[in-house]
Length: 343
Ligand SMILES: NC(=O)c1ccc[n+]([C@@H]2O[C@H](COP(=O)([O-])OP(=O)(O)OC[C@H]3O[C@@H](n4cnc5c(N)ncnc54)[C@H](OP(=O)(O)O)[C@@H]3O)[C@@H](O)[C@H]2O)c1
Image 1: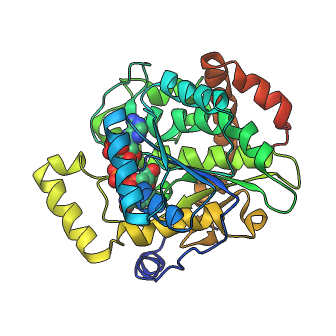
Image 2: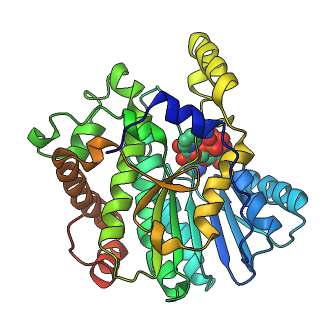
């Protein structure tokens, strides 16, 4: 069963991870959220391997220009594309995919990396709690809308990859107790009254659990052998800007800095886990799995429990209902590419 132990955690944090070096010369790769942190370092790794094409995203045009220039300068690869993608907006996700389709692009791997961690309750223009939309709903929408493109690029010899960047923090998610009595899981966890400050303390962990559940549900519904291998990745605790918002509180800043000073990996080291899942071979073995330190690892006990599996199944259906209303392509993709197999 999946347990997070202090010893296991520390051993992983201090382990040296393999530098990815697969041949990607015929691969078209996408990294979401590549202006800083793990996404940026992953993009540099990928660019250094000279893929056929590399498309990275940042939130807006200005960040895009800078990200493109930075990754090109660090890697020596020219002609990297950077497109804006703002996960606080479903329209932005849909525009990204529209643009992708209009330009006839291909995708062998999508690293859904962008994410936030905040203790503040705020909502997006679409009306969802921000962490929930950015880390979960928009990531799920992007994954589903890009699925046909990943499937199209996959071959029996080499499946495409959908890599969703989750976290070991999914083990700490503790806000779904009693969900069996909620008429709607998503409506409940998105409700302002539910999002008290103690709930927001656990919000990031919850969204990382939801990503694990989504990826397990999705992978279980793809045909076998799959043309797209789906995995979630734990990059480990890294020195990134993820905690920037939390660090606006001096006490939290002190705690985070101390904790990171003792155990955090560099973002470069952590980014190897994303790149590994996106390009190294044996992807079918990893399909449907949660990866930690580039190895298959157990998900949390809660995810595997009868209660967790039931929540996961309901969440999948609720998610599809919401996303299908936002973009009808989701319904077509589900009926054309996914079976009704139960996870
Ligand atoms: N660092 C860790 O210790 C750690 C551990 C486990 C998992 N992770 C996961 O790793 C992923 C990357 O995190 P990181 O540590 O590299 O953090 P980071 O340095 O803060 O980078 C996060 C990336 O996501 C982007 N992003 C945030 N909100 C967005 C939005 N609304 N729309 C589009 N892009 C948005 C950021 O863009 P802006 O700069 O414009 O905000 C940035 O490019 C996250 O999914 C995180 O949960 C991190």
